[in-house]
Image (cartoon, rainbow, N blue to C red):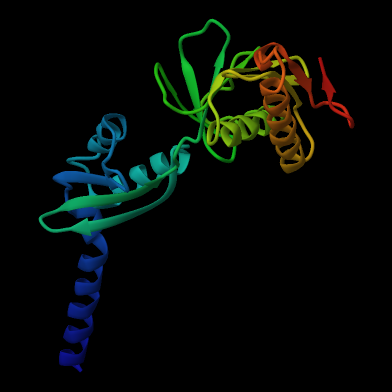
Length: 229
C-alpha cells in the first residue's frame, strides 16, 4: 500500500514537473525564417524581445504578434535545444503598388487588396490614386483593386507610360500607343480583350496612312460601344 502510494506520488510529481517546464525553461534565442530566408529586421527585432523569458510566455507573445501581423499568412513555432524558439513564416507577397499623386511613399498591396507595407521604391506595377492610401492592414476599395488588376495584366505584355485613377475612371497611357480609359468595375476579361483588339487595329490602320501617330488617340472603354477620339 505504501509502495503504491509512493509510486503515485512520484508519478504525480513527475507529471507536475513536466507540465511546469514551459514556465521554467528560459529561452536563449529566437530564430526566424521565411520562404525568402532570414526574417526582416523589423520582425526579428520584435521576436528577439522574447529572449530570457519562459518558453510559455515567449510562445504566447510570439503567437499574438504573428496573428496581428498582416504580412504573415501562416506560421509555425517550435522548441529546440539548447533552449530556443524556431519560428517559420509564410509571408504574403506584395503584388501591386499604389501612391497618391505627388507623394514619394508607395503602399504595397497584396493580391487580396491588403496594404502590407509602405516603401520608398518598388518595381511593382504602380497605380496613382487621388486619395490617401489606406493604412497598413486595411484593404483598398474594390474599384482600386479592380484597376490594379487591369494595370497588372497590361504591364505583363506592354509598356505603360502612366496609370492613374481620376474620379470613376482608370486612365492608362500606353508607350507609343493611345490613352485608354477603363471603367473601375465590370468584366475585366472583356475589357482587356476589347483593349487588345482596338489598339491592334489602331496600330494597323496607322501604319497604312500618312498619320501613324496612334499616341494622340483616346480610347474610351466605359461604354458598350467603345469611343475612339
